[in-house]
Image (cartoon, rainbow, N blue to C red; front, side, top):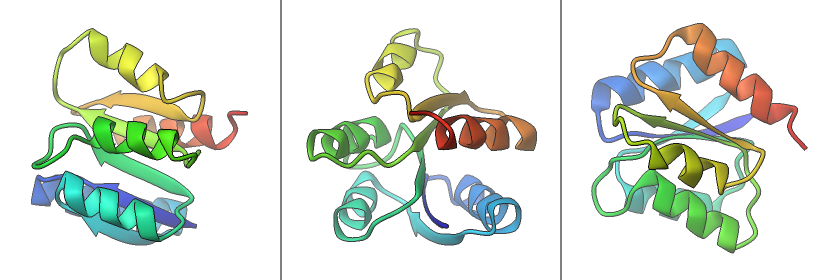
Amino acid sequence: MRVLVADDDPEMLELVSNIARRHLNAEVTRAGTGHELLDAIAHDPYDLVITDISMPWMTGLQVMHSARTAGLPVPVVVMTGMENPELAEQVEALGSRARLLHKPFTLQELLSAVGEIAHAA
């Protein structure tokens, strides 16, 4: 499994990357900005994207909406520490293979979100 993890917080990037490696047995690529996320998703196929919303240059949501427009149906978990009721609608607009996860979250919550989108149609 190839997983792309994006977050501008180095500690969160490390934590989620390690979870993907250990619990999903994934090969992990990291991105620290929206630009790096966009570049990675444009050039390589991934089985899963786990991205923060707030990042420099372009948000994780903007990148994923662009990916959907380009026809990339990759499953995505969108992480955020923001409390904005509109975010749920924006993530739902990405389709059935997208989930919103509010920080802080537990290991089980992350793995559950990944399991849900892996089995979504």
